[in-house]
Length: 247
Ligand SMILES: *Cc1c(COP(=O)(O)O)cnc(C)c1O
Image (cartoon, rainbow, N blue to C red; front, side, top):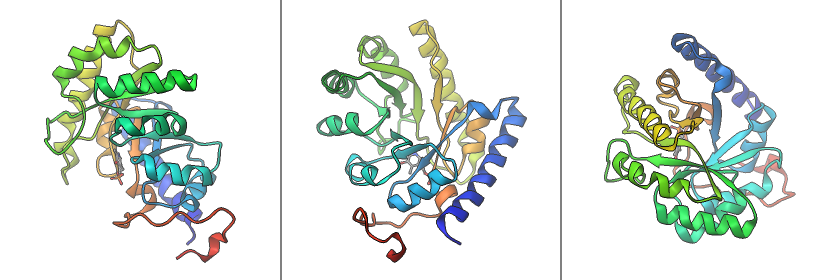
């Protein structure tokens, strides 16, 4: 099977699972956007995914995205979903339509500065480390509430909601409380801001149905669409190279 057939079959199964999760939760499937996570996958996979109708793509590293995005269709939308260092903000602002991983005021201020230089306003999500895991970036819930008004005062950032990567478990039911916690934190943020936050980015291949049941508006899916990732990043083919000669 080629990539397009494989992704089309996987996407049909995912859409059916999202539909069923929405039915259980009394939600409308139109409220959920799939963010296709293409890290480690080459542009040919992105092109095939776009042919299948996927429109929003996620990358977790700026360097990789910078090499990849110029070789991908210009009609699709890119979101940064991985930790962002301040020295990469300028590139990130040029490459991505949304940054889902804002995790400090210092980073937000740098995005403000670079977005102003670029003459744009950038939709962002605030990343929350819901379980306080030492290995993960993201705001602690307390810190987020402390910094929220300062974040909201940055005119070039448009805060659209929250994002999380919760503790991993083979049993998605064990992740449910973390998704619920993110939703409750979004409610608390809306109270403080006096304005609605439209997005909750939560749920990955392992647990997206539970995330949908708990209110996700964006699910970030890699493996379930594209299969397991190689442990190393494959080189990006040169523009114009025959796509049929890859491995
Ligand atoms: C890789 C990644 C995903 C997708 O993970 P899968 O388990 O392959 O679906 C989602 N979110 C983030 C932040 C990621 O880095």
